[in-house]
Image 1 (cartoon, helix red, strand yellow):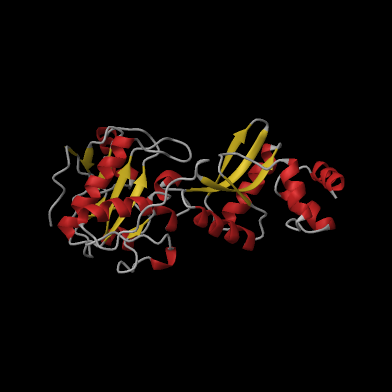
Image 2 (tube, rainbow, N blue to C red):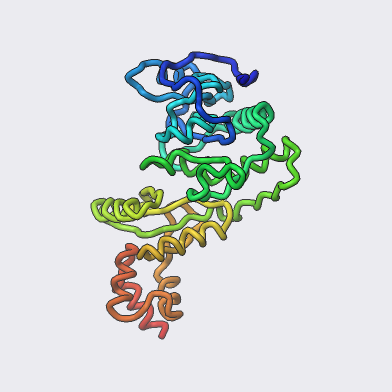
Length: 305
């Protein structure tokens, strides 16, 4: 079993299981939460007390480091079964949502994945964003850390680009099952919002409720409001699917193309008149749960009715 020739820095971590007990048929991309170098990441994985490692790491400058050889299992994804079959890759990223990576790091990630697939007989990368397909590489051979632990890893930036990553890699592998990537909406990414609060305590309470239901959510502060959002999607259909899941879990939601954006009183009033917010006490409860001023909305409804 070989290692990638793209590696420019090697510092083998003691945090590993040797050898891995499964053939390599999966890849797991992580975000570091820090725009660090491959040397820094190597130092992070060096102490045995850290109890963590990855097969490869990509620095902010696009250089690639190796910390656990491919013949061995890294300790990276909070799941032994996954790490025994996956090549794990940590990518330097920003320290807050959406945990963006540099263009150089992103390009290096594509190069590394192409090399990993070629050497390990992986004909194409498959991504369905479906946790239930873990361990079924014939249907999906990309996994994420958030499926195995209460983490946001690999962050919204990389998570929402998994389909794009697979497409770019498969194009270079010569896969015949390549689907064209849809472009971003003109207004930016599609985000699903579940509330907007003047009180940070109330926002934190909503954040906890959404997380308790198993959703990866985050808070943004826009002006004097704390807004709770889930995801940042390139494809509107994916945002709509997430909105339906949140609504099925009991949350009032809407889709916006701006981070931290909310709806105007006029927009809400028209939606009320269309029956989208229910009636009476239910309407008041839903509007306030979403962080809106019920009295202001109802006043506008009365003016328009």
